[in-house]
Amino acid sequence: MRIPCKSRRNLNIVRWGAALLAVSGITYALTPVTAQAGGPSGDPGREKPTIVLVHGAFADSSSWNGVAKRLQQNGYTVAAPANPLRGIPQDSTYLASFLKSVKGPIVLVGHSYGGEVISQAAAGNDNVKALVYINAIMPDVGESFSSLSAKFAPVPLTKALKQVPFRNGAGTTGTDVYVQPNKLHQVFAADLPTSQTDIMAVTQRPIALSAFADKLTGAAWRNKPVYVLVGKQDQAINPSLERYEAKRAKARKTVEIDSSHVSLVSHPQAVKNLIVDAAENYMWK
Image (cartoon, rainbow, N blue to C red):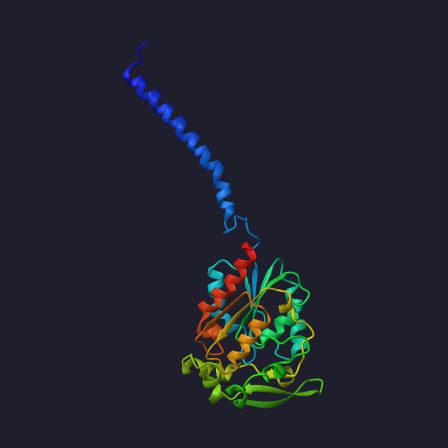
């Protein structure tokens, strides 16, 4: 029996529709696999870590603003707690307690003196999956900022500090250390405009003099993945010391940039990129 032309067209439409549905069904079946592949190895990936940013001496958490903004734009949860700057025992204990309040994996980042603090605070904390050191000091157990720095040529910052005695409410006394305001631009942040460093000079937070002699009792970089950024124009921590620390810690990645000590302010994109490398390496490898 001959099928009328119109019927043949309808039949062809039905056949093409069935074929299209079949192909769509195959595509649909494959889609979840593709979506889950995500990483280079085909691993569905781990939970995205929280990024915890720890500032160093003469600064506060706002020094991370440029980095934090970029990390948030990449979908990361970010925390930048205040570092008390009262010495390793107090500061590392304070940070360790804060880290316990963060649920899930953590990438812990320290700038300058903050490197010491994160090294001790992260010891024994399995949630900390990677450590990132930005123009940082990284003593080993039994070492202090002063003893480690003494292995290398002194930096200009050492001649630009001033000491200010203070008294606590309980009657105890101590000494705070500041950068001399008229020298802060040169020795601390030479790659920033003076209009910015003039404000940094008058709003700087001091560090207790005793912090320079405090010895670490824990060094988490011994058993956690390490990432290091070296500022090649750093006048506060010798760049050769930063390279030595990276080598000693067997850093998975070391980045060198033309930066002053405050690369987190002057080069936030480069700092953010290294932090994301650490986070993605945890998630996908």
